[in-house]
Amino acid sequence: MGAETLQDWQKMLSSTLEWWSDAGVDMLVEDEVRDWTARPAPRPEQAPAAPAIAAPQPAPHVPEALPDTLIAWRLSDAAPEARWMSPRVPPAGAAEAEWTVLVDMPEPEDSDTLMSGPAGRLLDRMLLAVGLSRADVYLASLAVARPVTGQITADEGPRLAELARHHLSLVKPRKLLLLGQAASRAVPETGGGFTGKSLIVVNHFGQDCAVVATHHPRFLLERPAFKGEAWRHLLLLHRGETV
Image 1 (cartoon, one colour):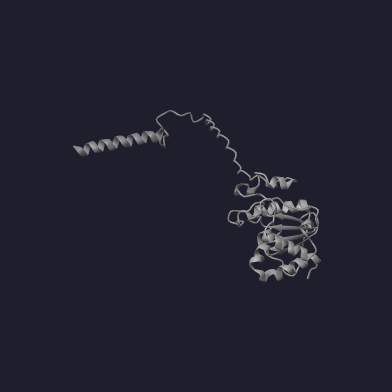
Image 2 (tube, rainbow, N blue to C red):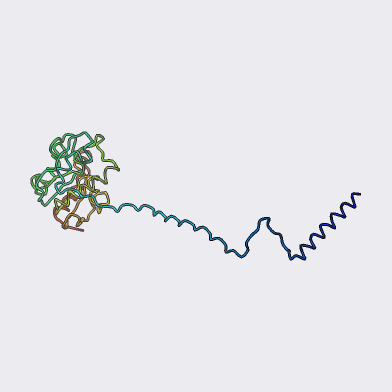
C-alpha cells in the first residue's frame, strides 16, 4: 500500500513539472509579484567622505627677542639665576673698552663687585703684566649669580652661553679673554676648551673679535704650574699674533 502512495505522488509531481514546462516556467519564481519592466530604484547617495584632518604643523621657531638693556634684565627676577637665592653681581667697566674679560660666575666673596677676592687680585696682576688695569677692561660673567654647588650644570650652560653671546653683541669687544672652561663655551669656536698656539678670530659680535680662552685665576691659585700656559695665552691676545 505504501508503494502505491509513493507512485501516485511521483506521478503528480511529474505532471506538475510538465505543466510548468508547457507554461514556459523554467526557473524558480518569487512568491510576490514583481514588475520586471519597472526601472530600478536609484541607490541612496553616500554621504561625502569627511575631509582628512591634516596633522598639526609645529609652530615656526621665533628667535627670542632679548632686550638691548640686558644688564637690567639679567639682574631682574626674569633672569635664569633669580631662583638661585644668591647675590646677582653686575658687570663692571666701560662697555666701549677694547678688552672684555668673561668669567664663569661670581666668586664666593663677591656681593656687588666681580672678582673681589684672591682670584680677582691674581687677575689684576695678570692684566698689569700686559699694561692694563680693571679700568681698561669690561668685566662680565656667564652667570650673574653663583650656584649653591659652585658649578654650572650641563642643563644651565647653553642658556647662559646664549645670554652671554647676546651681551657680547651689545658690548662689541675687539679682544675677548675667556677665563675658565664654562666661560669658553660662550664662543663655540673654542670647542669648550682652552686656546692653543693660535689666536681665534670670530665675527659674532658686530665686528672681528680676537678670542683667547685660558685658565681661570681660581684654578691658577690651586695649580700654579699652569700659570706659564695662561701667560702665553695672555700674550697671544695682547700681541694679536697668530701662529
